[in-house]
Image 1 (cartoon, rainbow, N blue to C red):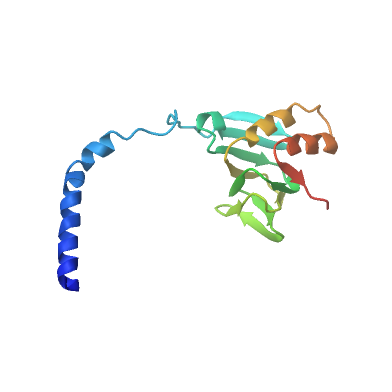
Image 2 (tube, rainbow, N blue to C red):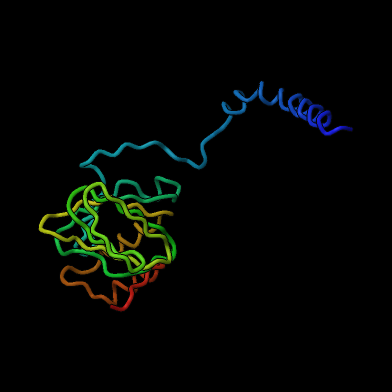
Length: 183
């Protein structure tokens, strides 16, 4: 069979094979159900569960139990000078979005000062840290995926008040796949 005739015949056969599916496609989409038991949620600015995690005041907006463990998201409201030392996550990636203030973030050895509207991505297994710089408080939206890290934050909140015992902090974080780097 000639090439041109073969292509014409094959194209017509494929079209005829897919016509019934195309005609019923509206029915296919109507039967699609969302995965898991996810429910829509709207969280206003002043809503969420507030945790003071060793000076990092976090308002948790979405947690794993609400997202089928796909993502957790919180708002950090942090004083100048407060930050997280260099560490590595083995389970989750993180996204940091600065809303107010200035946050110095170091990802894989590269330092950048993020300002309102700036975003940074810190993939798992890559060292990173952050610290509020300047003279004003910073507000930053942090997302981690998959979820689970919020359980670690709940444990850290349970530590006694006062300067944190770094060995206890490191042990709790280690239970969740997070390790601190020597400085």
